[in-house]
Image 1 (cartoon, one colour):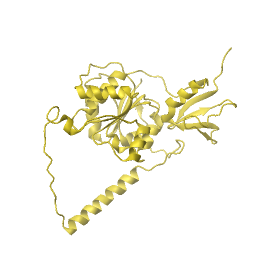
Image 2 (cartoon, rainbow, N blue to C red):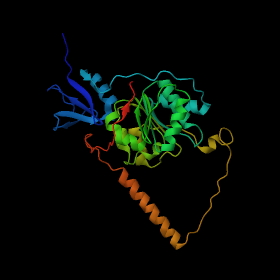
Image 3 (cartoon, helix red, strand yellow):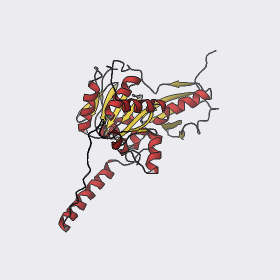
Image 4 (cartoon, rainbow, N blue to C red):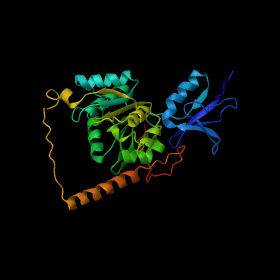
Length: 305
């Protein structure tokens, strides 16, 4: 006897839509689903995708799944040699279910840990970086171990591939369209998230595997809790003192205090005020069932994969 699916899952602008539900099926309490009367379907954040499938399977609910489009996997990686602490960090992340934050000092090779994570999991990956300089540095680091095309979103480039690097800004503008294309999210300088300013980018991606990197992980309870929800908990941490004199050069911290004149102080406060306003304006919270105002000025050009 043919068994028809009780519900159909699809990706729609950064959300998971459960359409054509069986009349006897109530998804209101399943993984954050809410009824969207506009489309007569249930809707949830894309980041709940793995949890949704797990719960449907656990409750023996049949479903049709068109969320993740088919595509090639990034399999051709060169061997990557890691230092002992980098290996320990990667192992801790894997033990944590491939979700979590690795905190290592600047210069200790966080990017190399991330490249090793891509190589070992062989998952399609979207790497998020805060600046254009880091965009090119990450592509260079990945290219040393991966011979195929590396996608890029940012600094005038608009191409997708199984391994893609994007600036925070470019990802934010395009995630509602590409959030179902990747199974692993890597977030450099993850401490920029967790305060509500950029969190929407992570909410609108289906990737269950997530690796956050930071030299200065947040300590405030609200940010820690929020990052644990979006990326995972802190799974491995070393301080500068743990590596100084061995893998990092020794150093001395010398604080230089400068006295500003009244005019200099006024100029400083004025410039900082402009920066704070700009930072707040560029990252508003506009998520509402994934139907935010489109910010995309272009359509990414996908590489066939």
